[in-house]
Figure: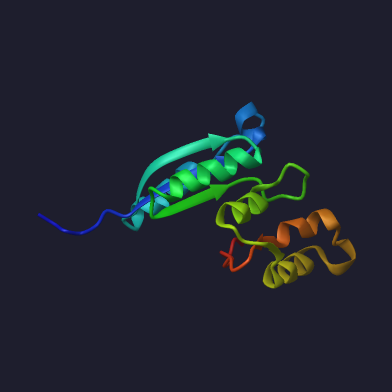
Length: 134
């Protein structure tokens, strides 16, 4: 009998566009495959709307029961992209302009094409580490 702890994860797919069927989710299966390959057991996946209270409640519930919680969706430049701010609130952290994310967006779009809406995507909970997504 092994005493090895089973490492678990949950995925929260966030977005009204997913729930309405306008956008098809491809992230859950991709994440599940990657986690399985490294020995992490995905034990739960939830689809929720772009509602701050729902995001905060769901995140806090799942992080209390899992080693890892992944969120997808809700980090674009539109008014309903509230995932980063909601995650910050769930952890009791300020939402900041991440200097590395700011540089990445400026380099991607060019300084002349940076807008306030695009720069919203560079805000993260304080202390967040970026994951490269080429």
